[in-house]
Image (tube, rainbow over all chains, first blue to last red; front, side, top):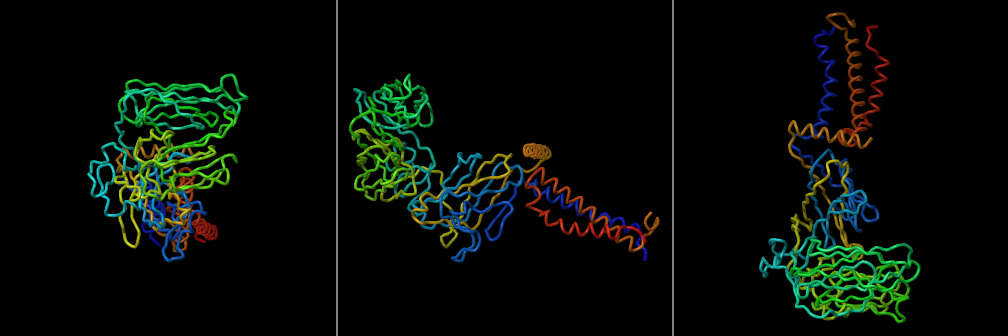
Length: 481
Length: 71
């Protein structure tokens, strides 16, 4: 039997056509003409574009879970998920189907640098705002009974913020004589002041204790909101480098300022102590970080740490055995019995006025969800409190939350669906997402994830767009070599 | 020329077809591997090239065993 050549040749071409089609199919997937690429995982099997959450000690094995559903349970904080980027794209929409188990607050975001320090976290879920009692308004949420413009007034009382910046409150006090307060604060601190007589006038007594060798540089910066209005650096060591330096003064004086709450940011390492604060401001507070320093080599008797605060949740830690003590915050207290270990203190009372915080031995680093006044009459709230996983909006009488949080869509049986959009660097091969569920381990909570959909987007391809994409791919390929 | 100007016998036709299939598959395999080398993630998520290597070896073996000639 003979095969006519005119039939044989097209048949011989078939495998080559198939090969070209395969390459074309891959190119079309890599450069979809509509500019969209979708990757979906339900954790039932591995996915080439979406990896499960890690590290493994904070998550369950992806797949069928012991209680019957399929997905992955997160039990630690933070956890990370990586995704392979299918080409140069400008942004990615992340759609999550999740369920919170005894976990009131969840945030989701993207890691923007290789070191994992630059995070773009967005609110994902807050149990306290999921009821119908809260209505969405311009700038966040308010209770139904509240005026919708309440969030824009700038007054911080009864307002909390969640990953958002609040309007600067217009605060001003009449001028008067400067009053000095003896303190022992170690290292960097933020001090918020209300201008008095139209001026900011604060004099810090500083001391370099020279516990480590080398010159120490400290910086004072003053901000109104995010706007920097003053900056000055100073060396603190002088000629002494082996023994405690003298206390010297540094004055921050800015005349004729607008009303507002000003943040004086003192930046230095833990070798520099603030020994006194003298100011004409009637109202000034420190926080949310407060580091009571020791007085070794400076005073003969222990200096207790006293402050007044509306913080309801604080964590404390000491680095010296001399700092082991019982920390008291109003009716609540906690015994700090080990060094280099954080101790948590949560108030459950309904008191909204400032209450006293006492650290009898000093030498304690404290971080709160509010601010700390070092004089009883100096307390004010420079801006709304941060919303944390421990915030009880009813007990703490929070009537408004400034946030760009969008309530997730309930899809039944406790599950929610939420979508977040992130701009991405087109040169990245991989994306790293982070899911933060603060306090999840201490409350034995969990976050169940059953489906993730990533939609990569860029503009639909034109001829010039094609050239740009090809150029970007070639640049990326060259970088990888 | 194989099989004359106008017609090919059946054996030569299948052997030549086998050669074309093998060549096309080998070329595709190499192109995909080179593409994956230069742009990681461009090929492997869509086509698992490594899984294709065994069938390709079989094809190459068959091609050596049955080269496209008439006798």
